[in-house]
Image 1 (cartoon, rainbow, N blue to C red):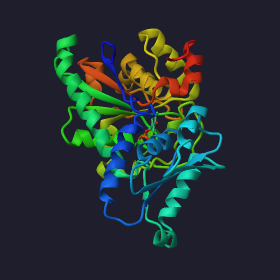
Image 2 (tube, rainbow, N blue to C red):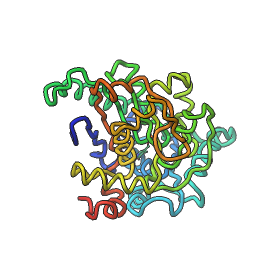
Image 3 (cartoon, rainbow, N blue to C red):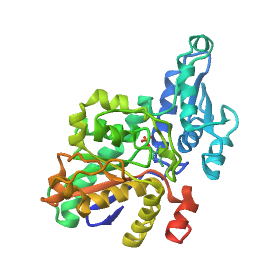
Length: 351
Ligand SMILES: *Cc1c(COP(=O)(O)O)cnc(C)c1O
């Protein structure tokens, strides 16, 4: 969806649970079922969720032969709609409510995988984005959307050789890593904006060079409430920190900023964006409205405040001089999934 002269929104929420995770989860379920077809015992999937993964995985694996799913979610920290979506399956899918945070849930899952006694009794696997089969299908929508923009932009808007920047609201960084895979496969993507909420482990790493996992904090964009992103290891294995700084603009936003961004996007474009996509909207708006230019002119941003981290990505001149940058904001959830927050920001219940 084109929302202004140099911004597209890539709506990834048209699957059954209204979040982009349906892409990865549904592909993964069928692939796992296929490769388990000759086994005599079920494969047990353990999955930790901060809200959206549980429902996407539950829906994807429900009634798929040979698979058994246990979802762990933090009590009181997912929205009512999310809880209904993830806890009302029967048959091969069950949900356990944990007193703790998402990180506690993820730690239980990771501990189970390293427990040799348990692994002797049960065949275990993961459905979190540490599993590569979630990332591979996601790389296709980067390929499709970047080619679409590349091939249509000149015709629609007179930008002849657009440089495409994918703006990715991120938590575990599985989605963004899928974009890196697409870029390595040849997708015409010039760079990325790694956008997080107040859980700013990755922006801090890019700003300081030190990676420090930490406990997660709750935000309005709860599917990104992660203090120890699982795909950090993948990104750090694929690229040096200097390469990351060249490829990524990096940005974080607090809850107040998320509310203001939902409102701003709605007022400027008429588009209703969810709290996760709103982090991307604000990041891209700031980049276009002079914040990136200020960095190129030597401004030193304070990375402990919401905004861009101080690194200048290699594609900066496409925004500041050549004016041929097109942003594609990945809209990872339907706004109605976070209806009360969106209604408070815009004054209108989302459809
Ligand atoms: C999971 C999720 C994210 C974060 O995706 P990662 O791959 O974990 O970075 C962002 N937005 C929504 C709505 C999500 O469900």
